[in-house]
Amino acid sequence: MPKKRISKEKSIRRTKHLTEFVICAVLLVGGGICVKGMVDRSNTVSTNSYKEKAEVEVTDPTEVTTEAFDPNKIIYTSKAVKTKDKFTGNLILVNNDHQYFSTGKEDLVSIYDANVERGLEECFSTVDNTYSILRETYGPMADMIKAFYDQYHLNTLVIYGSYRTTAFQQQLYEADLAETGSEESTRVAKPGFSEHETGYAFDFSLYYDDHYADYDGTGDYSWFNGNCWKYGFILRYPENKADITKIQYEPWHFRYVGVPHAFYMAKNGICLEEYEKLVEEHPYNGEHLEFTVDGGKNIEVYFVPSDDGSEETMVPVPSGYKYDISGNNSTGFIVTVYKDERVSPETENAPAETQPETQAEETEAQE
Image (cartoon, rainbow, N blue to C red; front, side):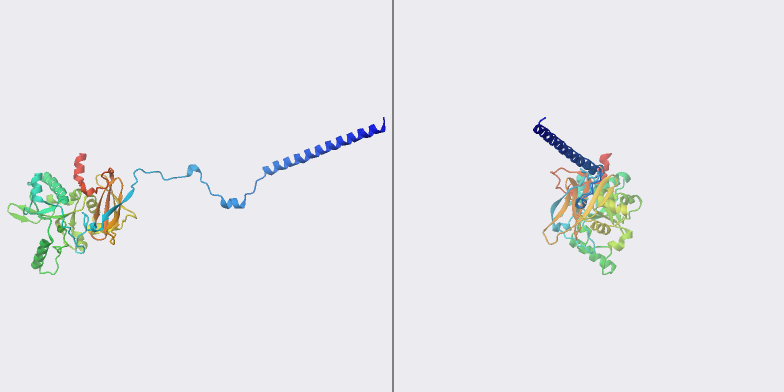
């Protein structure tokens, strides 16, 4: 064989071996890299310290609680009320420390004429035909006396005191001082400080044939003590509250405040002074006073201080619920919410006092 041919074949074989070697080396290196990657992935990866700090804890979705929408939750809106109206309303406190400021526009009704109109002349009467009282008070008062009459068939009740002018209150006060010789009366309120001047109060007396007798609330007449709250009345000067009211026990003197408030005072044995203080301790932006009146009505009451530096006070009121607003005659307004009584948008702004309703009327309707 020629020498050149042998050299060429050797060269080809060397080149072939070298190529095979290179390919094997590449395959070995590649395989090693793959094996290392598999091993690395099988090990636990350390957590990045920055990620640990930035990570937000996620709660199990099944344990997450969100506040569900409550269709019965009361939503409040603001109502502009004249600040001076804090001196009006069926919850105004009038006593020796709180004077009544008459608007001169009291909606009075003749008790005699109203009795004739309703056919109640046989149920009760007045000392004379000039006696008047607030229209708002007359309806519940007449309903209460009629209920008593229907049960006991007694027509001896007489309205001995009702609405009084300040001038007439002055006469009564001076007469009492003259009779007792005292410098200050505990039986007759000072002129300007009498509930009778508001038209929300009345006094009972009894008339037998030809003479008057004091009403003491005993016997059959004790019915009024146990039932007056159903018509929105309280016995204003209880025997055990004279140190607070500064007026001696008057079993004959009743005051209209509205059914919810009368119920709460009767149920808890407190007088109007104590109740007003209690309500002030339940402001709008705090815990409200909530209770259920016998018969099932759910009531919410809260206090709103008057903005004495402005002509108007913005009073939060419930949207879509019946409510009423009364001044307390000193520091602000008392809002009463009837939580079971929805109202339409058209009547939403109409205070509840424009739609008076007694507990007794509601009971009769249910029966």
